[in-house]
Image (cartoon, rainbow, N blue to C red):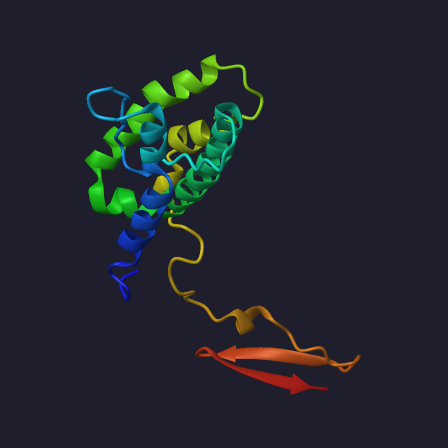
Amino acid sequence: MEAVPYAMDIILAELHKACLYTVPKHMVYKESIFQSKEAYFRSIGYQSDGENLEECTKNYLDQLKSYMKLYGALVQMAGFALYKRYKSQFLKMLKIISDNFLVDLKSRTVPELNYVELQTCIEEKKFLQVPKGRSMQSKPLSRGILPFMHGDAFSIHNSNNLYTIHFS
């Protein structure tokens, strides 16, 4: 991300354009603000093609779920970097999620809701673990690989990190 500093801003802007709830704000319907309920629904991201409200809501929620999964995956993968950069602010956000959002999820009886993975991630502080693949390997992968020699006997000797193979 350092090579392309605005990449995350562009991704978040695209997510926000498609799904209002990627930014923590909630628009409430008020007659004084919106000319009609349809205008309100369009402003929060409903895409109606002559469908009834129930079908439109189902499509909207499916769309919302997909974008939230993508956003959650980005945050999950970036948890280490978020903690490293924002420290106490990131911890406060996790506390709010744990105290409010997870409590609400637990109280619902919807089988598709799986809060356990998120709860475990927060409780075990998995965001403190350096993500796999974040940094270069310190040892070459070839160090542990032995050549296949079709039954020939060989030995490997290490002298000051210089390996020699002797065949017998």
